[in-house]
Amino acid sequence: MAPRHLLPWVLPAFLAFIAACTQDSKPTSHGTESAAASVEISGARAAQAGESVFLSAAVKDSSGVLIPGAVVAWSSSDSSLIEVSASGTVNARRIGTVVLTASSGAVHDTVIFTSSLTPYTFLFADTASQADRQLIRDAVQNAHAFQMATFGKGLTDSTTVFGGFTISGCASPGASAFAGGRTITVCLGNQGWKVHKPVIRQKILQHELFHLWQFKHWSATPATSAAWVMEGSAELMAYRGIAARGLLAFETGLGCQVKESADFASRTPPGLPALSSVEGLQAFQSTQGPLYTHSMLAMNFLTTAGGLTTLRAYGDSVKAGASWQAAFTSAFGKSPATFYGEFPGYVSGLTVPANYLCGI
Ligand SMILES: [Zn+2]
Image (cartoon, rainbow, N blue to C red; front, side):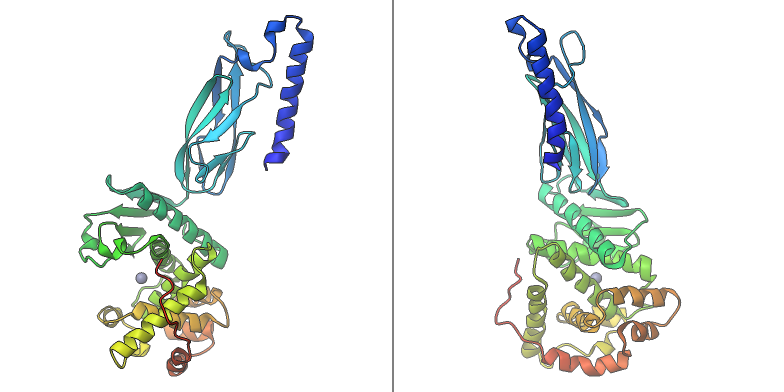
């Protein structure tokens, strides 16, 4: 953008400068910059993340007279969040708030500029770190974009993302985040959150945001869909989502799932129960071992042929009133019974990495 805007902006300023020099015989009045006594920014103070808006700055002399073509320099307190070009074009890259400054000569003006993302509202405990806040905002933005890119539809109802330390649903120290209704709650003080590094924290948010997507677009609950399908697809979307952002190669993330599942099986023979026995939420949640991981491998297997859009097809069928088994068969091209028969062979054929590679 910059080169295209720079020329039309600079040229009039330059011509005005020349005009000032040639029309005025007094040598003390060179240029217009030295006459700037005030700058005032006008334009929007907010934008949607991903959008661009335009600001302008009026430069006046000490008499309050506009100085046409005065040179203005723009800057942002954090260009990684919201950047501003030399011509005053504001590019709201990420959700956040910055201070934008327009300077001319020795004077300047500042405005607070905020970018947000509809339909999300973020609420944090006062003691939440800035790093956690921004990571959560970024993760939601990324997850939303990934849902839009994958399915052509995201969340539209107002959705609140909480981050706090003393939240009732966070009673279990191992809980990292959970989704319910139109909210996501992140348990910032729990080990389940704190042990993870930034990329896996982003993965956690992507997982929870896909649950909200399931609630809306599948109208599904574990009562109307197998629990392992819901959890496995949320985990799959999460790893695909962070891969789409270039945060972790999908094959690396997948390798970690394979390793975790295989290690558990060798440590605790015969390993995890058959997925056919954890269709119900209670059975799923009371199972010991890396069942989320195992469920993700299942959903990766099921979506290999048709891609992630089969998750949308599955949900569309469930939402239209089909049983989850019928929806499963039409979306993934095989019945649950056929899948259950094939899955152990798929898992045993996966290459187990020597090490965990995704501890990031
Ligand atoms: Zn989940």
